[in-house]
Amino acid sequence: MSLEQWIVDFANNYGPLIYLVILVWTFLEGETVVLVTGALISGGSVHLSVWLLALFAFLGSFGGDQAWFYIGRTYGTPLLKRWPTMARKVEFAFTLLRRQENLFILSFRFIYGLRNISPFIIGMTGVSRVKFVVLNMLAAGVWANTFAWGGYTLGKVLETYLGESSQAVLAVLVVIILCVTLVNWFHQRRKNAAADAAAALANQDATDAK
Image 1: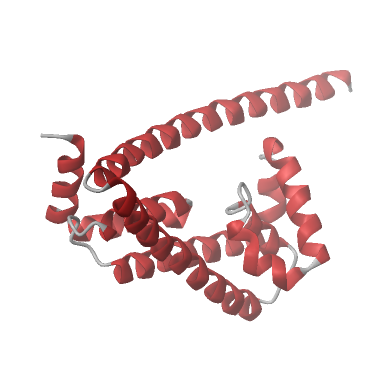
Image 2: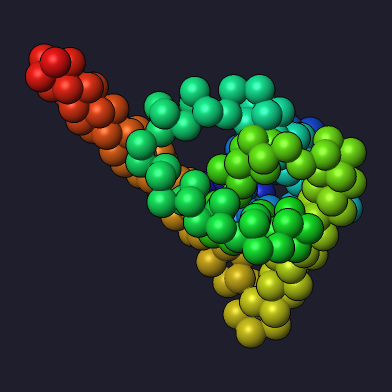
């Protein structure tokens, strides 16, 4: 069985599970998986709904950002001290938020590298809960539909130019995305562990100096 056929069969046999994966993935990150899934749906061989794809992507994205917002509002400062590797991203997010609050809330999920840290920072700054819910809901809806239907359109374009090979190309993209995600995850874990060890050593040196 080819890789393409395996992915198609899995999606068709475990459709509800795919939506659950989309929900969890977009809760954490995930525009790429929405884009590729939309492209796979466009070929017609994967019997999933692009409307449901957009819905679950919206729920995951909205829910994830609301969670980070409340974590930042409740535990912001203590947690920031444990994330020394996030210092540059945090400062950048603060700068953008101060310049244009509403626009930043509407657009941060489209800025690479700031998806998770931004609602956390917004929660720390005391932005109204109601204001964040409304703007976050609007932005999550735009985001989910942009990538779900963008992927669907991409699939149609690939099908036009590549014919039957388009699904094989998309299958390979799925595997590449999974591999890159895992590599990045392990790399980030090692980087954070090294930063934590360096911070602990610096604190120990400061204590010994006293």
